[in-house]
Length: 231
Image 1: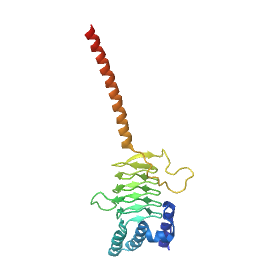
Image 2 (image 1 turned 45 degrees about the horizontal axis):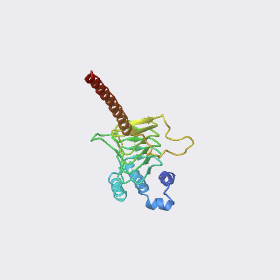
Image 3 (image 1 turned 135 degrees about the vertical axis):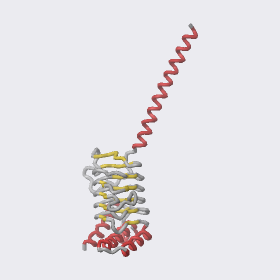
Image 4 (image 1 turned 180 degrees about the horizontal axis):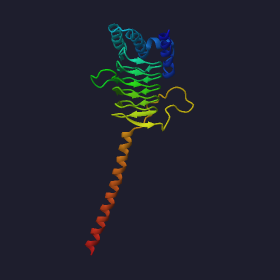
C-alpha cells in the first residue's frame, strides 16, 4: 500500500509543477519522468530485498525507455518531479528528499572509485536546474536552488542559491526561496544572480574610469607642453 500511495503522490506533483499537464491519463501515458520514477520504485523494492540482477535489468529498461538512469539503490522520497528528464543520472548511494524538482541533464554522481557513500544527499524542496552536476558524497540542504549548468562539489546549507562552475553560494537567507503567501516550492530557476556577468560589468566600469583618467592626464600634459613652447 505504501508503494501505491507514493505512486499516487508522483502523479499529483506533475499537476502541481507542470501547467501543461491536462489529465491523469496523459501523465500516465506521456510523462517519461513519471515512468522513470515508477520503474525505479519497483526496482528499488526488489533491491531492498537483496536481489541484484532483476532490479538492474529494470533500471536498464528504464534507461532505454525514458533516457533517465536511476540506480536501483538510490533512495527517493515523495514528490520527486523529473521534468522532461533526458540525460538525468542518479547514482547508487544518492538520497533525495521530498518535493524535489530535477530538470533534464542533471547528474547526481560520484567523483571516483571510492567505496561506500559516494553520491549526494539532497534535502527537501530542492530545485536542480537543467545540466547541473552535483558530484560526491556531499549534502544539499533544504530549500536550495541550483542554477543551470552549475557544478556543485561542496556541501550547500539550507535556503541557498548556487550558481557557477564550480558552484558558489550567491544567496543565503537574504531572500526567501518561497515568497510570502506562496504555496509549494519556488520553481523560478531562471531568476538567478549572475556573478560572472556582474564581475564583467564591474570591470567594464573600471576600464571606462581609467580611460577617462588617462584622457585627463594626456590633456594636462599637452597643455603643459604648449605653455613651455610659447615661453
